[in-house]
Image 1 (tube, rainbow, N blue to C red):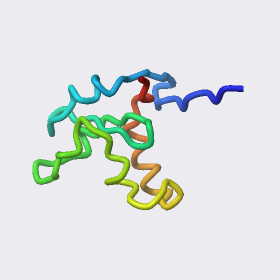
Image 2 (spheres, rainbow, N blue to C red):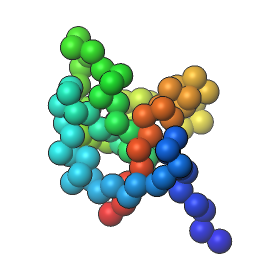
Image 3 (cartoon, one colour):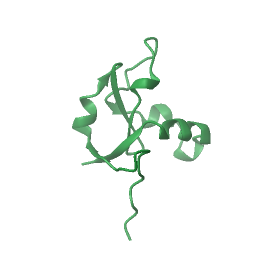
Image 4 (cartoon, rainbow, N blue to C red):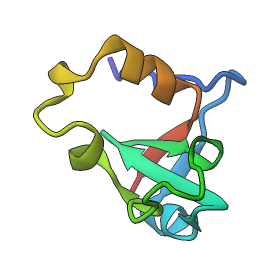
Length: 88
């Protein structure tokens, strides 16, 4: 049985390609990939935040050791910004 993708807060699942994520690479329009999930973190960033990870896979930046080391608070924070799953 195939695992169902996690739903966004709106109750939907959007399939997003890496090319689409790359189109969102600025502080005013920032999407990142973390563990094959896509997050729109635009509202999280401030002008002083390093936005070099926008439009890319930020898994190693946000989860430096292993997914099991991610705190519940980090996952809860990320969930607010979850918009879909990465597809080929």
